Amino acid sequence: MSKIERIIMFEGGVETLDYFSRQMGQAFEAHGLLVFYFNLEDAASDVKKVKKFILSGKTAIVTFNFEGFEREEYIYDHVRGYIWQHFDIEIYNIAVDHPYFYDNRFEHLLEDDKILPGLIKKYHHLSIDREHQKYMRTFYPQFDEAGFLPLAGTRLDGKSADTVICDKIAKETKAKDKSRDIIFTGNYTDLAFFDQYIYGINDEYAQFYMGMIDDLIANPDKTVENVIISHCNEEMGPQRLSDLRVPIHKTIFVDMFVRSYFRGKMIQTLANAGFEIAVVGAGWETLPLKKPNRFTIIPQTNSRRCLELIKDSRISVNIMPWFKNGVHDRVFNSIINDTVCFTDGSGYLNEVLSDGEGLRYYDLNDLSAKSDGSHIVDGMEKLLSDYDKLDSMAEAGKKIVSADHTWKNRAKKLMELFS
Image (cartoon, rainbow, N blue to C red; front, top):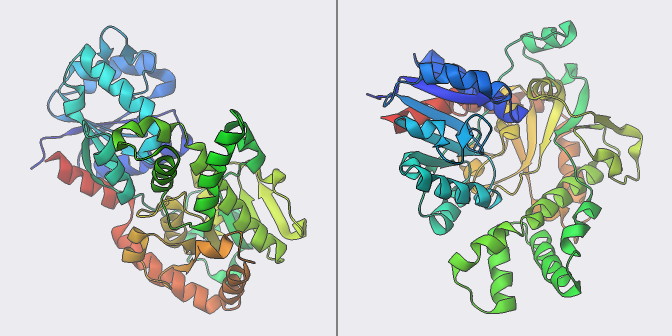
């Protein structure tokens, strides 16, 4: 039986992470645990409250992306460290991005452990992709790589300030009754934005960086870290892996460039083929289109509103943020809300959902520079030609996701680690 009776989670930071925390926190509460939602925007007040809430030895912190461990004001002091270090508290951090984005965070934790030893022993790192796990073991062996915890889906509860949306949420929405054909929820970054990083030093470095980018675009099954390591070894001779940790971190714009390239290429391919498509997020006005007349931009919004928009669409497009052995929550969110997801696969996703079980797989190679995108267009045309088929696919996937891939499932898995 778990000794943990109380959980501290965070809100007031990144909206998406707030949403994840609330969903998981409710699951903890349903299992009888007490949850304190520490508001980072009101830290001065909540520090006093959380100290009264903590029972040393019986309290755990569950956080996303190092929230509560970013040396926030009132929580952290350069002399005394984090307030958490003065209690017997286990720390479970779920990183929703690749570890190479967080190199500075890991360095800070090591520094803070020297202020008051014991922090690293209490820290448990959870990865949402199995490739992230491998990276942690290789480059950050000082930290406990506590396991693989994929992201999860959230089903709308039927509550909405919009009565029309509320009515649609309350029933099992059929494809024929939905308002739009295709939706994508996520921001876009114009590729010109990355010029400052690619060309900012000299032509030799620019050629080096573009070599990595071209390799990933031509071979989208490769991981970013393996491409960077390969090109570094080719350029500079064989390198010790330990010497490449910082260079990889400083080259993460390669990851962001490739994500944006494929995201933009997918939307261009569909919009230019004449499909009705809506995107939710910032930056899309910079994407050049040949046929913009059926393309709609919905401003960036909150997580719940994204779920509502997904539910009211026949197809939800997903382009993995280079998760090769994990999954983006967009996939599960779509399926659990009666919408078929059009997505690239991953080692993990292919294990848990077969083609037709709430999703249709496409190949990222069909969006490469050498492809005309015809397979993407054909696949989408077939999906939208048969609404009954869409409904049966959505139902088949929803049964699986509802049973195995909700935040309730993830909270249960975490509770097993507590014991």
